[in-house]
Image (tube, rainbow, N blue to C red; front, side, top):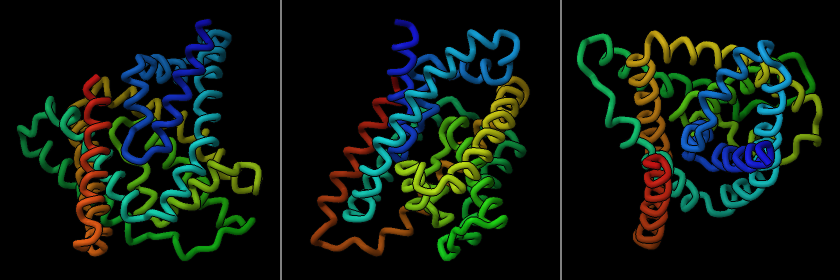
Length: 266
């Protein structure tokens, strides 16, 4: 029964991972499995049978939810772009109050790190892969490996929106399609999965270290990335607004904000 509940929790985390703005790691925190999962990854061989069952049950749930929901999100993204984007913006912005309330900006060092990570995504946006055609080549492997590492980063670090980062890089649709159809091109899936595996190991150890020794810097950096993502996405869609659609998209924005705000408060 314990592992069934872990599977169900994995389903919820996986749904949160593919719904833009709803951080899967934040849901893991709410469900009280985040710290245990980080510890299990970092100390797997101390009790590998126990951690294998724990991570396996959780991971299968995440995998199933990711495949089932990615195609749904992709459909709405392609056919109802403006409305979907404002729902995403609401979902992302709704997580800010709970993250920001306990963060202090006292000291020049904390302000510097906030500004640095606020500006970082705008720098990343210059390296768009949207024009690059993925093939079964070494260069494609390296790009997909990098995107897998990035997925691990956005999946493990609470508050970072993988949606916004992927949109800045121009690969959001590609990633959702890969999630929804992982067996369509095994080379792409293995390339991405290799980066994800390496990223999970490296990032989980790094996060454990940061939480222990540099928590304040870690928190302001996350907040800087989050505010930058919100501003970038808003600037990318504001030109589509007109008198005919503004009321509907604002309703979706408020709806998305309300959902993620309530979830992040739990």
